[in-house]
Length: 215
Image 1 (cartoon, helix red, strand yellow):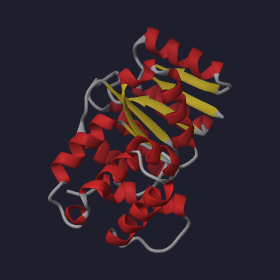
Image 2: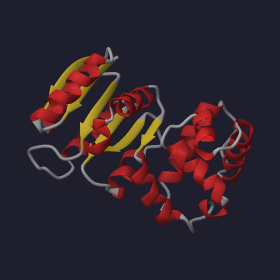
Image 3: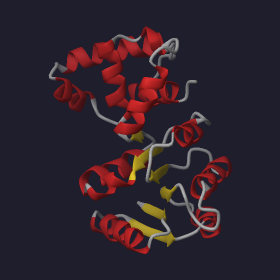
Image 4: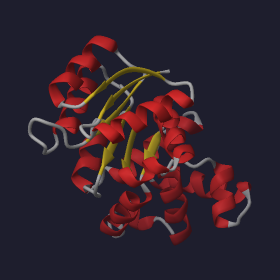
């Protein structure tokens, strides 16, 4: 799996390279600014991009904007965004085109190698990997939005874990319920969000995108 990394801090960038290489990822490029990121994404066509939101020269949302432009040119390009703080606007903007293969993690998560690598793999496979703190803030903000307001408390818990990319088995273990109960909750969620019948993996992504991109 070929990865492009964009991070301006040398120690963190080098750490990401070493970590992913240790898990058999191929690092196609590791850059430290927006223009180089744009060129690398266009020229190398990686399987997934791991991108810091704030990159030189602007140090605002340069990395995110480069990733969004690359996704416009190559729809569905998997992008995992890293940020120092929760920025709801960035999460919504990343998800706005309705394609899967996106993630938003706080940089603190990078220090848990298994969790971070799992997120990279899920995003590269077309899934989502959203930081729990991002989900909590979006959940609080959208708790009264329809049809999100129609979800029960348990369904919201399932949705939150689904947004993190958890499997039904993992959700069941977290909530101490059966997988059958989780399957019933996810079916109810799909119905309340008016998602058309399709394979479960696709509907899970669509449900998460619908959930996170409202408001």
